Length: 264
Image (cartoon, rainbow, N blue to C red; front, side):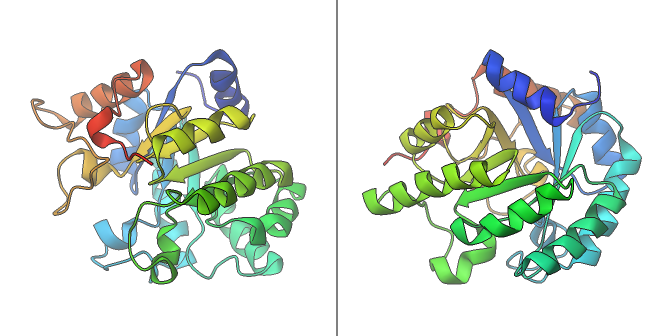
């Protein structure tokens, strides 16, 4: 596998070739992910829950994200590294720029932000300064208190239309990728077809351009397994094989299946 860039992922979408994304937080797992051929590593603020033991992502800091991004960057050279900007770190364009610079200097190739139309000026400001951006719509974990919990988003027609409109605006503002989390499969398919940028799904059905999972979830290490997760360690005797099977299942369209998908 050659080093993956934004252009690589764009070419995958244009050709109809799916790609895989997985979270990693350290050099050891980053190396295993690279060996499995997985195209993108997300240094997720999910580390607040799976590594730090918090009950949400909200306590995670920019320093935490920079530390783990640097560890991941030392462990691999080929996957594209996308780093979450944590809660409160991009509440203004100026703050976002300062914090995004810190994450890029730590080794990220792109930063990810959660939210819709209110982020347009921030995304434009970042991309104009050579900081690629990945958007995130649907269930946005940093908004868990506003959303009233971890619930499927977009089942209501009005809410679904808002997500569609936001997705188009994020692309127009300069976002290079978009994550859709916990939305009905038909909505995710519609958005994936409407956008020219690659769409990455998690609990969003099989018709997105890529899939992402938290590595602890897909290895069966988490105490709670969400509906959209498949345990790829089941039947395998190595983490390396589980990661390779995940990559192959995403590429072939075998994962996610209907049991991992939400309906409208």
